[in-house]
Image (spheres, rainbow, N blue to C red):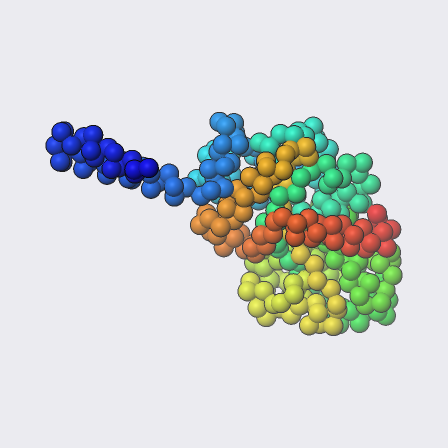
Length: 341
């Protein structure tokens, strides 16, 4: 079969060499631009068929899930056009999850979720679980940091761990809502130092800001929150970081040791991911998964990671399914040991 440009050149020969050459050039440019579109974007546009992609953030505006959804909205613009983000907050994401089940079979509906939702499903004894969703991909991760007031007598993580070994209940740890990532980390640390996680003295708050106020006022021994949230306060010298929950030291806090470096065998990441409703076809799942992975490779997403201080944690397919299943088992165990699950 002849290339379309050759056919067009022959048919337009009588129109003059300059006109023919110009029109052939237009055909080649259009063909090149069309073929340059990422395969994931082309398939997704076909799947959407003019419909708008919607992303639920199962939390109030301003939090990590809301930020993730809105950054996705920006990064997806060049791939599928305009998307809509909306919020359904409450109970660690389980309120949004419950409403999301009504969207079964609709591939135009996505939802952001993560470790916090895994914990909330367990701690709230939610009747709706992640089986009501179709996993697509993990996107980012953020690690936790354990801090104390700058004038605290607790100088290192080794000091804190030693105090927990002597008297677990005497060490109060301030963090976010019960069942969240901070609760989970406190329980894991208690278990790692040989204590009973059920006796962890955890003071729950609605957010990291309130937990920070509690430790600064001296009403808690230590506080736990996300690195991206507390790093500015640490660098300003307002609080002292004892350890991070990452496997290696973090670029944002290069002088802060990991828990494992401090003799506490714990690692925990506050990962965020995106899912689709249950009941979509396998082809729809593959198309949406390809679209999300394509998004994570975009320049817009790279800029998001840099600006937010998030770490790329893209994982999709069977590997992501296995990861979520392992996290569910681990989180259920520690929350049950703490008497929360």
